[in-house]
Length: 507
Image (cartoon, rainbow, N blue to C red; front, side, top):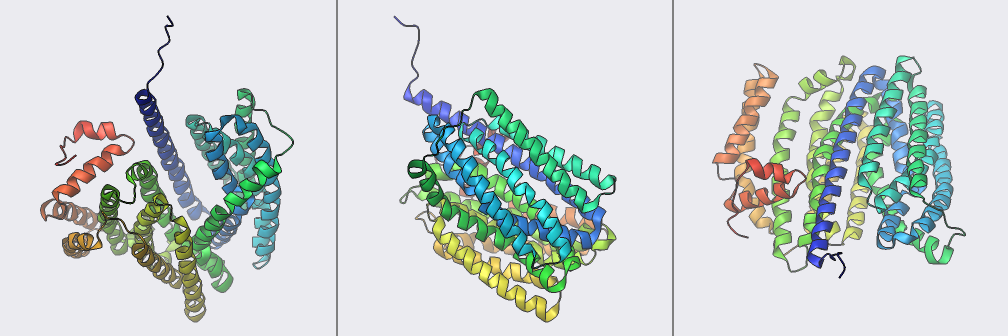
């Protein structure tokens, strides 16, 4: 009799669940750590180079970001899905991705240079240099995607963090040696080469073998067709994120774009470190509970939306009230014109984080095509308002106003589109009335205490807000139950459960 004991389906499912939870935890930790390093570096960089050079840097980055999806990054998403289903096809996909993405990266580079001719010669030169990393990053990204398809998350996580650290260290060295923006872009190219070499070395060690000739009918053409909707969505989304900077540079100059960038950095930090990280961790839970008739899914989305509002409201209020102190704390006096921009721009962040909950929920419902139309509508409004406000008033605050209005439209359309039997807007608005009263009182306390010292105002206001949430009945028993389930499902949930003992009222 054989000593080998075959695993049961239940054991296999548990192993899959543990592996999935581990992967989610690794990816979330990597995202938070890498984005945190980049966020801190961008603040340091902004203070070192000043508004004029920061405006040039921001414009080049915006051009790069909008054009980058053309290099074929969406192909990797499809390849990961297919390789995960059929691991023996990895050699065929590797050779196909290398061929297709090399060609597409060349196209992206040409488009980047052509669009850059609409701006100054300085921006054109820097864009032409920075654009080389489109090709270099492509090689590293393909290797990264192939590892993800094999669920080798830890190796890719380590490499991504190392790559960020190397990039920041080389850029800082270049600035210290006096090479300016040129040195920063060269440091980026060197870091991209190091990343690509290390990742492909890992595949060589693993014995990856390319398969030729390329299977056009069976693999390459379907891969491109399936990736096109993702490409369109990525370009729309990135265009929406960077329209204000691109239009501002063209209409009122790089210096004003430099004043906008610190507000965008704070927006980026909040969205990436709070919203994106949490939603990535919650995605498996949402997907697991989703069916058209399952009210639990709708209830989770409703509670998640409300908890997001609960968390973001004091952040938005605090930044609005103390924007002058926050800017002066983390940026030099050169960025004082950013203060009025941030007061408005933080509400763009507020609306974006709320919208992200509904966008991710629609993705779970496989209704992402509709979100493309909503993004297109918001982008159109953003462009029109930016054009009018920047030309008419020449004030960078106009770009912030345009972003808030466009994101407000997006949130309204998303809220009209999303529906589920367990989600009720009437219930949400009933729960929000006391919260709005508390928010008003918190703002008044922040203003009064802030007259003495702004940090005191922030602390007293936050304490009042927390006390109000706990004592005013803003959270019902069901809310506490759901909050416990949600936090327990996040990476580190076992640690949370160790110190927060709570028995849900219902299963």
